[in-house]
Image (cartoon, rainbow, N blue to C red):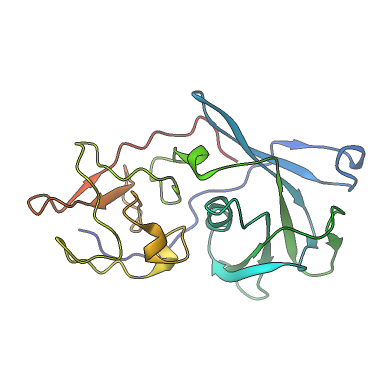
Length: 219
C-alpha cells in the first residue's frame, strides 16, 4: 500500500500581516505565524524578507518542491536552525533550493539581493514539542514526536527492517536529515490521507495511522 510517490506542493504560504519598517527596520517585512492549537500557547513565527538572503552561517541546502518542506526542516531543529532562504531556480517551475542557516553574528536585517530569493528569520522561540499537530489532513510535514498509533501500538523505527521490511529509505520524504533522526516517529512519506502513520513493532499489525490533531491555524 505504501509506494513511493512524487512529492507535491500541498501547502501555500499565506501572508497574515504586513508591518512597516518601523517595526522590523526593513520595509516590506512580513510576519508569518502558526497558531499551533487552541490547547497550546506557543506560536511559530517567522519574519519574511522578500528579495533578501543571509549566507553568513549556512548549515545545509537541498532542493524542495514545497516551502513548507523547508520550514519543517528548520522547525525540527530549533537549537541549530535560526533562519532559512528559499531560492527559486531559473527555468525550474517546481523545484526550489532550501538553505538552512544557523545563528547569525549580527542582528541586522539580511541584505537585499538581485537574486530570486526570500529570507525567513525566526521570530521568538519554537520547540519540537510545539509542533504536535499537523497543518492539513494529510500531515505530510508533521515533525512532532508522537511514536504510538491510534490503537496504542509502538511505532517501528524507520531505519529498521524488523519486524516489518519496507522501502522507505529516501530521506527527501521526511522532515529530518536522516532516517535515524526520524526515529520511530509518526510520519507520512507517501502522502496518505488521514496520515501520519507508522509501521508497528507488533509483527501481527504491519502499519497503523497515528492520532495527530489538526493545527487550528497554519501559515
